[in-house]
Length: 155
Image (cartoon, rainbow, N blue to C red; front, side):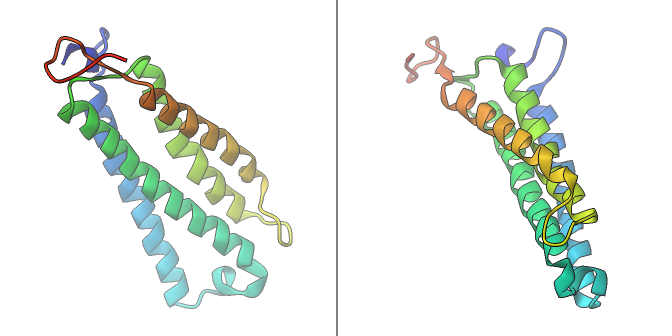
């Protein structure tokens, strides 16, 4: 699997497996915190005037959890299907990690300070994270197959 490890020693499957599980831990913990706020009827979370905060934090938890698992899936794909070649593996890796940080992070930050029914300024990084995610997905979808491996075909 020489194409999965960069010349400078980055093992991308291990990188994304670790990042995916640690970020999954962080966003699952966020979910537990949100459930605790709900369970103890914390007004700063449950009041109708804080509906935007609740939505932003719920979106942060949901997007973060999903993107964390996407990192794990990416790592397993690289490891289990060696015939799949990813052009610009470093770019795909960086886009996926940044998307995992920016998209849910923007929702999380946007929920701390809200303006009436509007989210805070953190919401501005959400589209950046979404675009990075789409770029990573597009680059992965356009991946090539290794012609040297039986059963694979080049596009």
